[in-house]
Length: 439
Image 1: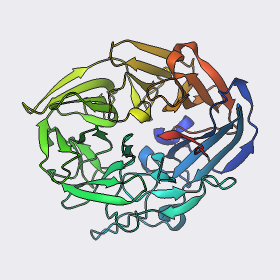
Image 2: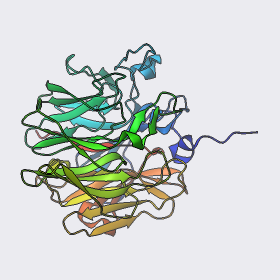
Image 3: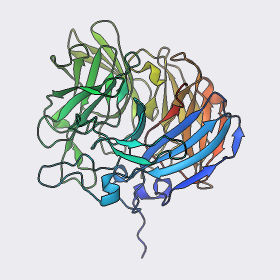
Image 4: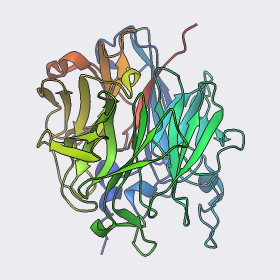
């Protein structure tokens, strides 16, 4: 009797088992000629074709090169972490962590000329970006020995200073959370422990011009939980921890909110001197079938209260903006409606939210066509201006994948270009459009 694979190893969640380089990919429509660079997306792809949880597969980055209106290349490469090459464990069972071990399976970003593959349990891994060597693994990166904690998979770059803000969590003893800041040159210049009651799964955070805000939510570490060692515990409570950027070693304000869970933040901004506005993709709890929806939290620092508002009743995850507006007021945000392991089919769509008017647009990809996260690629030098959304889309009928490009200002019009990929791209997590550096 054949045992069916676990949901996170079935269908398009199943891993691909080799690496490939291909050139001159077929295109339907017209690739915007302004797009010159790589679209990269990371995700779990266990090289042994098995893992205990979707989050626990080895990282594989899939990339498409766009240049001169053509799709000139495709590459997929495993991130060769110490765990991948040597089977090294992150935790030694005696209280010690090897942060060079891990999966590097969650995100891929660029900062200070380095392309970094990220997972929140470990150090980042640097990927090669030299022509002909793209996506090859160069090794772990600890900011010259200054980083001693893990690094979140969701760092944020300040558009004013070029600083990279991030945090680390996951220790078995305090401090359970540490805030870090690297300057525009890539030097780690600040590390500040933040006091929180316990070890929780803290996937994302918020950055504004004046503040950083951490989400201390009731998904607590429990090594007895199968797969991912975390469980929902509403008795832990939920709070937003606010720190001023200009006083990084100063007091932390803690504002209570209703118990919930948030994997991903859309954006945040200051509203005057004592108000902060946060947009999140919010789950009512963790680990159940309930989907996430778009919510707005308005923090009143003078009263120490938070107004919590649901903005939409449609499923949405993987929220993104034009990252040049990170931490500033932004009118538009984008999110994906798709499926998770074992959730059953959900119509695959992209959503565009007008955060000023409350209006929205939607593009449905059609039966059996499921998009992933859509990264924003700007069309010009104007933050918040025109641009394109890039996403990998899986077609269940043919078991193939495409890179689909849509005009961000007219997503309902459908793709401006579709690039047929030479292999299926399994569902994954996060990525970015990385344009070639200006000469």
